[in-house]
Amino acid sequence: MERIYIGMGSNLAAPAQQLRSAIDALAHLPGTALAGVSAFYQSDSLLPGQPRYTNAVAALDGTLAPLALLDALQTIENDQGRERVERWGPRTLDLDILLFGDRPIDEPRLKVPHYQMHLRAFVLYPLAELVPADFQLPDGQTLSELLAACPFVGLERLPL
Image (cartoon, rainbow, N blue to C red; front, side, top):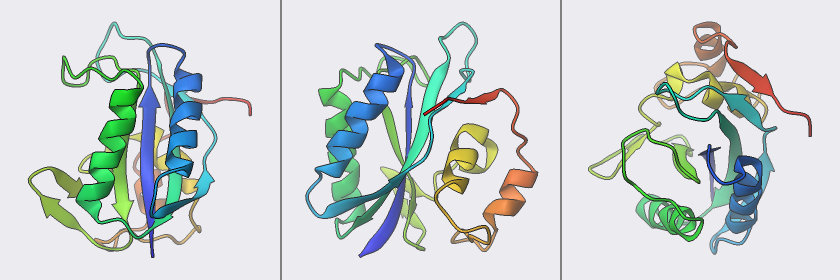
């Protein structure tokens, strides 16, 4: 059993409801158990002119293989209307494997830890709600070090 962290984001078709639906789908994935969910946050899009994103992080305890989990996450995205038209374009749902236990993964379809999570406040701050203060990533960096280098700018924590 490994602890897995999933980044979630949506900026189309009622984003908060998209995340709630994704959380429900995650809770029903075979071979996993939902262990926690952060608060929802709003952030500006990485590309100008797009609607703001609603983001969160979910924690799963699971026995699925990493690529099997990736396939399951992409099925959830597709079931919720995800269309892959433009890189970093607007989307109904984006589910990213941020961390998979304490192991790095370097596959053609999957890089873990997520390759840009250290630059994204909308990932780091929700993740910080689910892990201990001294949490260490597979490369030895602590989450507190990453947070210190990635200020809480442009984020809005949404009321529960």
